[in-house]
Length: 207
Image 1 (tube, one colour):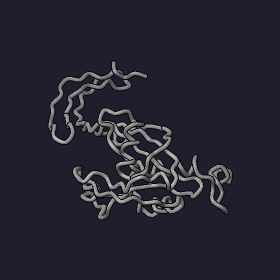
Image 2 (cartoon, rainbow, N blue to C red; image 1 turned 60 degrees about the horizontal axis):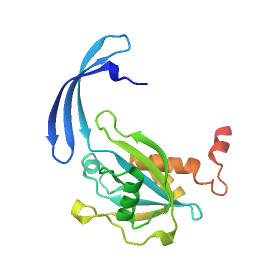
Image 3 (spheres, rainbow, N blue to C red; image 1 turned 90 degrees about the vertical axis):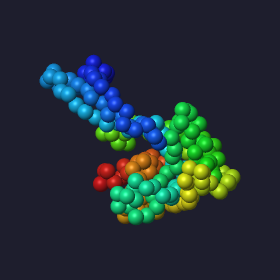
Image 4 (cartoon, rainbow, N blue to C red; image 1 turned 90 degrees about the horizontal axis):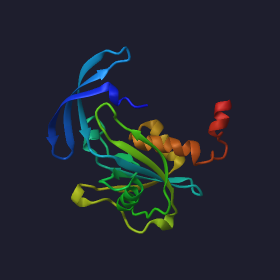
C-alpha cells in the first residue's frame, strides 16, 4: 500500500555530510482522519547493509565476531560488542557484499548464502534497511585469519560458539546486538534441531 499521496515534503536541510548524511526535513503528513499535520524529522542515511549467521549443523556451532563499538560504549556497554558479521553495501548487491565482508572479518569463505528477511533496524531516525542471511560453514572453509581492516579501525576477534552457548549469552545480556539476536533466534527456530532432552519449538508451544 502506497502512502506517497499522504506526504508533502516542504523543506530539506543538510545538517551534516561527513561520515554519513544527516538531514532535517519539514513535511506534512495526512492523518487517518484526513487532516494534515506538519512534522519535523531528522534522518541519518548511512546506506543499507547486510548481516549473516554462519552455522554448522553437524557440530551445532555458529560464528560470531567481537569488536569495539563506540556508540554502544558511550551508552553504558563497557565491553566489546559480540555480533554477527555485517557491513554496509557500498553500492554492491547484498549477497556479494556479505560474502566479501564475511571473509574480511572472519577469514571464512562462504560457499552458499540464503536470504531470510530484511528489516529496518531503527526506523525512527535511521534509513538503513538490513538484509539478513544465513550460510552453512565447515572448519575447513576458513582460509585466512580475518580480523577486519586496520585502516578502518577494525580489530575483530572471531568466536565459534555452540548455538546453546550463544542463546544463553542472549539471555544473560552478554550478546546485546539486535541483528545478532534476531539471527540467533531464527537459527534456534528454523535451523537447529533441539538438542537431546530438549523439546523443540513446536513441542514447547503445544505444552
